[in-house]
Amino acid sequence: MKNLKRKIYALVETVSYDDLTVQKYDFFDIFIVVLILLNIASVILETVQSLHLRYAHAFKDFEIFSVIIFTGEYILRVWSCTEVEKYKTPVWGRIKFMFSFLALVDLFSFLPFYLPMFIPFDMRFLRGFRLFRLVRVLKIGRYSEALRLFGRVLNGKKAELLTAVFAIFILLIISSSLLYFVEHEAQPTKFKNIPEAMWWGVVTLTTVGYGDIYPITTLGKVFASIISLLGIGLFALPAGILSAGFVEEIKTKKDPMKKCPHCGAKLE
Image (tube, rainbow, N blue to C red):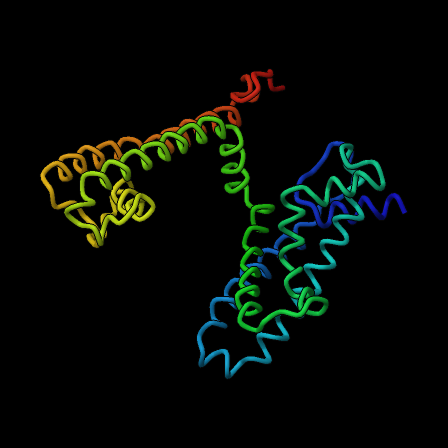
């Protein structure tokens, strides 16, 4: 049974561990990735009314087939996860695994299919709820080195990114408040309150500028010009942080003797 569990773990997982002395099966990874891509295509094509009416049964049958595969994959992952040291405890180890990010992605990739069987939903809500099937695209992160690299960068730079987001939020509040007080009398229907002025702040700071709301007073235009310039500079911060994170991760991968850029530990 122990050897079987290791083989199952090697089959469903993409990460190899030193103590896992069994063969890794790549065909399963390829099959799951293709199935995920076909599911995304199915969700998209199903919204085309003519295709939905013509191939409704085919879409339904493919959905059932996919749910069976994803459910079985999830059960095998939960059963075999105790092969990893941090999930070694039979009960709490599996519970800990089930609440990991990728395990939750796996769960929500098929859970919306089963919920209507136990909980009655309004049909309109049910149609919207079925769009949760798109979460299956996140499962590709398990098989893509590029996405795993992106995840490591986000995790390593989360403090800096949160600081940048907080600064953007503060600038949004200040700019929206200023334009409300400056433009409210001139445009009471456009700048009715600060929350509605925040729409102008978002499209201005992101340099989109839809043109549906804009200042007409001289002071308002001066403020808007300054805020637009600040927005360009401020929104460049996350891009710079992510770029630095990618450079650090790539250098660490190329030179394993370097120190980890996030924890400072020496990498062997």
